[in-house]
Image (tube, rainbow, N blue to C red; front, side, top):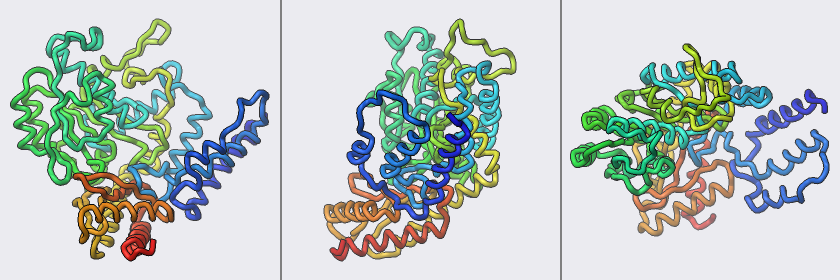
Length: 469
């Protein structure tokens, strides 16, 4: 096997794919059934030539790939996997480092240490906080809430990490009614329950109502965890951290913030005030594969109390080296031992963009979202439902019709846009109504792309509303 030829073949295919973005539709050419058929074959009995394997993979996979790296992909909050991060990730794969231990992979551990310090500085969070490099915000929420669970019970004299939850004092969890579904999943995984929570009423933007939060706090006793949100998934709204966090802490609650994408507002001077007071919390979850544009998978679990973090996550065994003074063992901060060295791509993207580049990227995306909203809202019958402060826009079409007809028209516009593939936007339910959701989080999406997207949306609405779709 000629490794140089093989790696060059893979790199050439990757570059060809990326360079063809402007020519591709923002949708897969084939659906799941067709993609399954393309890959279907009996278990191979003999070896295949390496170059032929890569060639077959490209031929079978590409028709079923979504253009998530495209500048007009707005379906979910997904970053563009910046080429610098991808290149670093290619090296990560080639180096084959298991980042579970500082002795086994010194460079992988060292780059996490530095990247963690950079992240805390960029996001304006307490510098003594610890950072775990995880798969994404789902596991980041899980990790932070595991630390929270252990600490609030420890204050009651119960060691949950050693004794589990059988017989433990019950933990009260307060969470906004519009929290992201992955937070409820994390509560489920931790034995705290998806439904055994106090759901706090929210306002029209999905923010926790402070009066309802304070009322709920007053009624609880014993260990408690309050979960707030930076960047509601539909509206982009932020909870009132400066008002809510002191109230929760006065009651002895641990405060966790789900900031999968919204926490990056802290890295942008023009948007920083949206997250004012978020630094008062005890833990934070965010993603690198959103606004930092790292490849998947890359998320960060950030905990103010490092000891609580390590107590919840440390994996120890007689065959694993112990961390000495001044050393950082990555496995002390994540629920994994064998894992990818995610710090390399994080380091590469921060090194490439720098503080100013990250701020500019966030601001550019937010401006693009504002421009899309402004242009389409100017057309009669189209209604933007949220105050566009960040990167999220939710829209209804046929606003002058009866509610059921508006829902149908909104769904029809989404279906037409997805079929034609000039942009990709998805649907959601908001306050019991159908909406189109636009999430702007790609490093290539600027004002020109926003104008193009708005024109495509307006044209689709015109066709649907005239019955010509």
